[in-house]
Length: 536
Image (cartoon, rainbow, N blue to C red; front, side):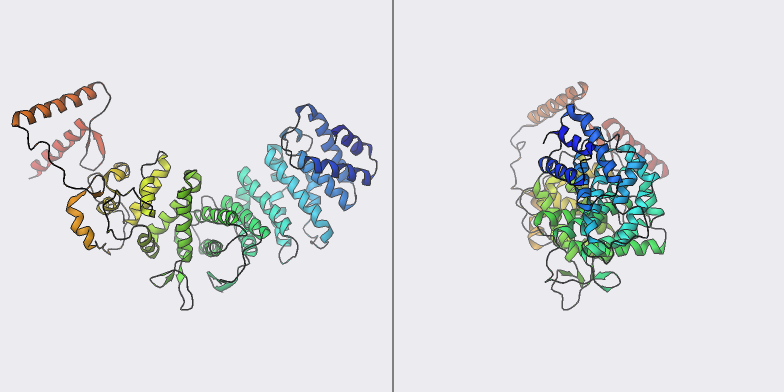
């Protein structure tokens, strides 16, 4: 439909029925439009103003819905938002979204479509306009959204309202740091959003930090899943920088949240993609939970439960995390965004909680039996993680190596057994452990046990590649002493030329295990030796 005709109908005020009919047709034709003709920019600005003038008046519900749908479509264009982002117009939309009063309950179901469309418009406008983001703080929008969430409690037919309320809170906490602080400190945002998440997942409690597990429960509906995802995203923003828990109340709040997230991991969405999105956001939020509160991810296993158990504990949620990690590795792309959060989470869990570490190690690094192939060759989780240790993305290879190192209780000899020196060299160099030893964290003293197959193969394992090699003939056995000396000097001269041309820099290992230029490393060894002789 011609934009000029739409503008004429809106500005001409041909009556609510005419405006509604014209806008309904415009909305139908432009529902999927996200790019607009620059030549019509002024007309679209005037259309926005005309629609807001109609919305300011008391018109019938169906006309309000049509106006708001048109405004939502128009607000996809950042350039037309200048007339929209005024205090007056923001207040009009907030009134229609039931964000202007504390007392008015959500009783009239007929108004729900208007509330939803007004919230959608606010989402678009705030996302696309820095002015609207500042006005949101001035108008105390976050507090009103939290109040609307409270109104949605125990109400029917409000899933869409709740979902877009949560999405708006997510956008505000993402785009405005002051609103994020306000949510955390003044509005009890963690508690409000946690309750919204709990409601979306229909959690039933059997103990303080243990939710009931119903195996026959159907998957979440699409609306429930979307609500849960929006709550998870908003909570992620509000709980950033929450590693340090300073009070007993905060500790309880995070343990309560972690218990809900455990339930979330054990819950399926309506489709496989939605389940993965739900679990991905749950994992992101778990990364913000203080590691001391993550013990609730495992719980004592009862006799009736048929879940995955280890050492008397229910490991169902941990298995979900492992499966999710492997699935993300198999995708083969977007490792930094998709894989590093779950790897970081598992690393911290393993570093702090012994039962989790031992369970995961049994899955990822079982006792070695067949060492005929290189550690990076194969289809096991271990093979896949070892391949990541030499990935081109520095962040990915660091976290993959760190995860395996923690599973090995930060012992260099144990890590080399599973990965080979070549794959682990980057981590060891960064930590100053090229000469061996162990990391900084303390772990229990339970010992690894080698299989008989590994013990028999160990003398012939190549420490660099980490796999069994047939003994190779020594090419120097058939050389005379003069030939050996000639080849040695030839090699020295080649290295010398490469070094002088600055194509390579010979490196050595300092006494503390870190890398240094060869001259410096040798000098430190001589100094240490001299100091030792002097002390004697």
